[in-house]
Image (cartoon, rainbow, N blue to C red; front, side, top):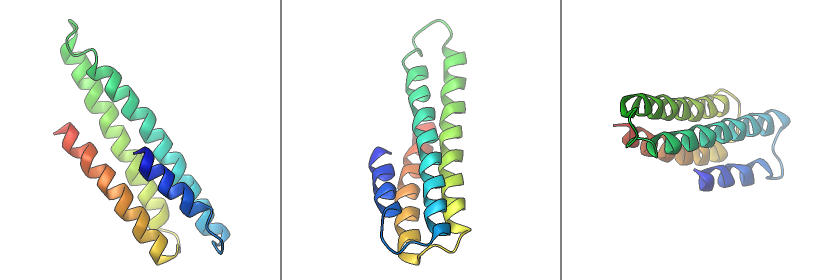
Length: 108
């Protein structure tokens, strides 16, 4: 996830980006930072699965993981809905798509 965020951060500093493109990419970065926070909470819940409240922690893990996927989806939506350079759009879609697949598999 951090590699994906770093990749997208680099894209946001490219010369020649229109203001609208830069704003969409920066909003995407914010969404990915939120997703990282949710994943940290997921990991914390996983660390408590052996405690007496296993079912509660498992539910928390699924909730936080789902929220992380939603944040990643929001990132993609913001970029795809704007007139963003097709090459930049493709890189973001590829990066975020891989992360979403990993998160989805982790929840399965």
